[in-house]
Image (cartoon, rainbow, N blue to C red):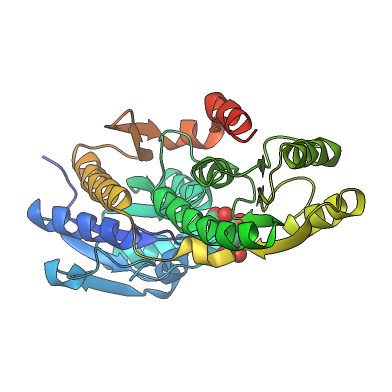
Length: 327
Ligand code: F6P
């Protein structure tokens, strides 16, 4: 028999579409399994401030389709200190909270692992980030929706790029991860994709654009991930323009719109599966694990492994495909 009677769920770090659907899944699965469930508002910050919400199944009505997170989110420096963690633990114990489910990216998972190791409180993490940069899962929550948002923008920009015979540099999110850039670049038919994980020389990019122009391309789209080592889209555009001014050049930064919006069907279903699996894992006695999806099956990976393995998530075949299909 599990000792766990009351669990808490929270979202932390950058939000991602599908977090609400996931909170709903955690709350309702917990109630179905006979547990009490508390929502912690504003992530680790809320733990320090006792910003707790006793949730029932109606607390999560009509949120499956909403972007953002009803539990709010924050980045919290105080939690990183020993005193901060002790305070958070005391606050949780004062409410008889036995275990935690953390939804967020690698920062959230790092905090969760440290906390669980220090105080022995069981923790299961759910990968919620648009960046798709966590080991142990093929896809993170929000990645699919963010890609759809980017593609919609690329399609619209393509219309005007084509009408005016222009070259557009579109900057997408991903400080350390080129996953959004690569997927959306392929789906949006981009001429070139610049990623943090790959060095692209400006000369190489110019050569590619020149070849396209010779092949009678009248407009072009270049996707630049925000963490590309050449700098952001403005820097890349400036350097290209200095040496290659065949096209009239424009820059669009998509920014935080990529983090919001209605979650896609794929993200909603993933959210439901992740939330359910996280509660089941806690009840089965698991701790310090991250839930993931691998080849359409739900899998657990230890936080230790997930946080220490740096999987190169950019599929080589997609990189090659992007090059071939943009000739
Ligand atoms: O981790 C998600 C992410 O959206 C990154 O792609 C981006 O670099 C970062 O968060 C932006 O963070 P903030 O909202 O704190 O500026």
